[in-house]
Length: 534
Image (tube, rainbow, N blue to C red; front, side, top):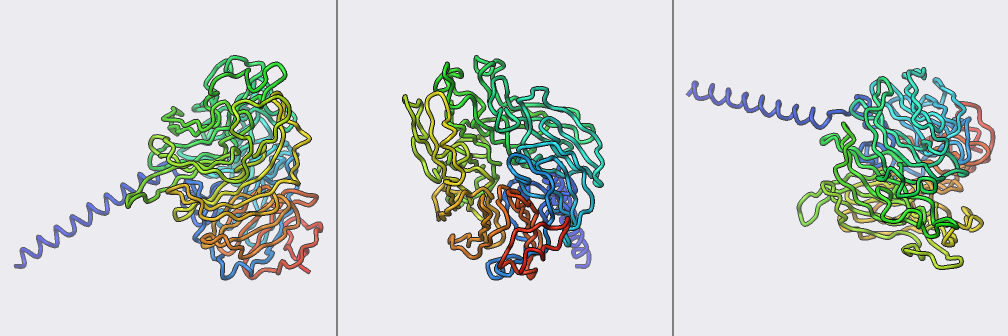
């Protein structure tokens, strides 16, 4: 009997060892390539959209519908640098007790999470149109620098290396970067400012750079034609504006690619006739191997785009239940005002849902004269979505503009006339669950915090909605406009208030100074924010 017990105990120990070994091997495999900073600070906001799946969802925060009304101003940090689109056009990162912010003069700031005090800064004073922002991995901070360079800093703000990625003055970078498996990923786009986007001969390229040296390890041309679809002096296009989704288990990354140009055409080549055909890989989602940059599949949702309708939003990776079984999907969207569910393995479209206002946007050819079109070139889904528990939350801009077959009618572009929506969509079916209308342009992305979903408008109104029903729970008028989005950690949500005369990074915390009245005033660097509260 005693002998049998010994054998049984030995078997149990052996099973335990095997199970533990398998668990550790699976854990290591799932974490392969993930920087230690991302793992250590996973409960904070260590990467552009919270995680590699781009969920923009925090369930580690203390903020919820029962206490959101107690949010107050903990501190405000003056953002020194602004370019043509304001001072901040993405979110900061939060890693422990430090907030990392890059403004639209390319300068980088490390800020104390508790007090808002400046720890250090690296100032470049180089314009960037945005979105732009840091990535952190391997004890380094990775950024885009001005229009043409990528750079790495140490954790004290000293530059370690810098590499120029474009020698074409009409090809620059406007992206918040990401890092994974020893590489830093960025993209160029065809333009550097409102004055020169989509000039002929400019195309976007995806790059993987060695984290330690900045050496290009691979690149991927988002235009599939060396002569830019037959007319390199006129045509342009592609590139990425937002970071990809990455699956660490498979080391596959998924990018949303921008549109072709010229749009809608030129006097010599109306309706995009300078670029016949589909114009791959614009308006597509592409799956790439992170190690070599080889393409596994693509899905182009809009061939031969006439209206600047990128599929630019960071894709979201999600696992959903369909008929009782789990299915891995990708959720993509862009300025065409549509949200898509794709099969993660093949890229096949599973569902397609229109959001916001649509008018004449599916024309294959514009008629003579002037045509009203919705959404406009800054309409549709312009800023990042969020995902939680089977639902995707989509910020929408409604904008109507005018086109002729040869030009975009600039005088029809009116940010003040634009409106917005926040739409909740069932990620399994594409069915709209609720749609909240907002009387201003929603430029502040979507961010889930427990049972709430936050968004904000270009005129600075911040909203928190019940994410199950869409009911408004709380709102707050910020002291400036917003075309960036928040990061969340613990009892604090941090918004970049980047538009207006006095841009600030504003930390709202539970139980801090009340926010009933917010006069616009000059704040000291690393101020307490009490200057806002009366």
